[in-house]
Length: 166
Image (tube, rainbow, N blue to C red; front, side, top):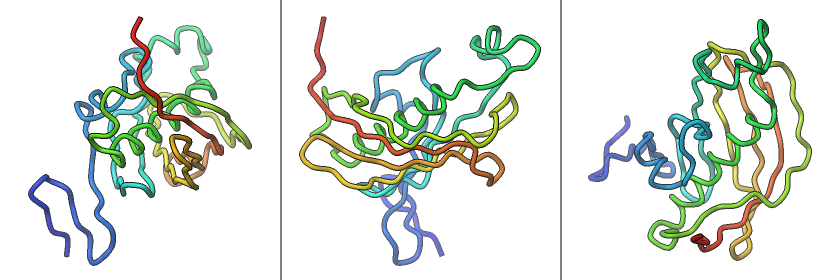
């Protein structure tokens, strides 16, 4: 049976604590905003381990006006970006107060593969797992699923740094 903690996180059995980050929490964790905020919710977040980002793909997104007219397809680079944003929320949630005023930046992308197009009406489940971290450099693997089928995957690295104000 699941139990809820004082902070709203859900404990499942005797395993690690899992919790949900809603859109307000995502916007506190990462600086992205419309039209470049590419996750709507993070579920099953286990600090320092993994998280699942949810992206509801809708025809109302401006990118579909040009990619591609009459045949809307979610750009692969934006699918990769949704992986990075999910990973960034995982990093910030893991570090807690130590992440305040810091930003997670992409460093590298390896082994990216796209299995089938993502189209309006799809709901992407962005499964991100931490492989390791050394200091402020983190490495992840990710698989994006739609209706349980893998549509994209990648291995990537990111670095958390102090925000540079301009």
